[in-house]
Image 1 (cartoon, rainbow, N blue to C red):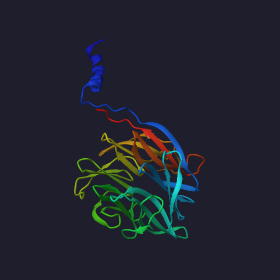
Image 2: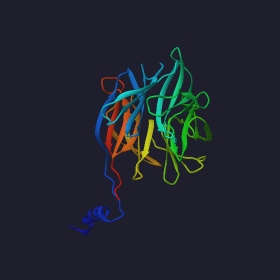
Image 3: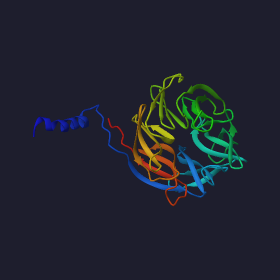
Image 4: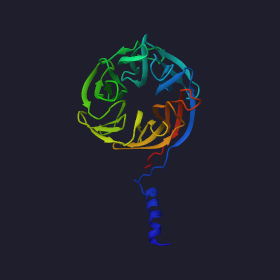
Length: 327
């Protein structure tokens, strides 16, 4: 065997054995997928949180994807296996949808919800709502925030300040997106307009150096430094619906959402502030996406909805083993 043939082996051993060098396993592994709720005709648009040693999952229940008035259901579990309903939020004449759970800096649970006015099955206007709870069972009445036709999609709390992007106007053009911040979840202050084509559903996360990263439907990653008024954007070259992502303790970014192609799938992706690569399709199809993501005890727990089992749109919970950087 020649020295040239040994080189790849030596490089691999060096990466494995030399202190300070890191290795990353090749692919994430799907550990399990379980259907956790299907008691309405159409269950969709999930989010997931772990709070006070319990799992909470929220989603919309309705007759179909749109056109009728939905309610928001919150279910809870101690082990991720047995789930029970603990709350239903509704508003007369309003289609409540796209619920997102977070923990307010004062310790309360907060639900960010979109509300659409449907008359005779036709869209008229919409606005965001916020509700709070001390226990997940009893919630305050959803209160409108911002002005009509805004749609705050997900709040990310960072150093006692909440950040979210609102999409304004229905349809694809001229849709606009605005970055807002809040201290209490009720009063939102304008920061800047995020000027990228077709901006829609957006999830924000922070890096250790205070860089804000945005994963934006339909196909963008945005990056900004404090005070977050100037942004640069990367076109990821593919569509994503219902985007969500997390930063793991090892610093890696993992994203999930609807992957488009011959058939829609809910998919997991590797991500950096300038790149995006789908790596694992979950059991899914038809009407599907809107994942909630929590990293807990070495596993990614991910809620999502899908209609791949018999055409009924239901809520699923996946557990995924992620390759992490080992140092």
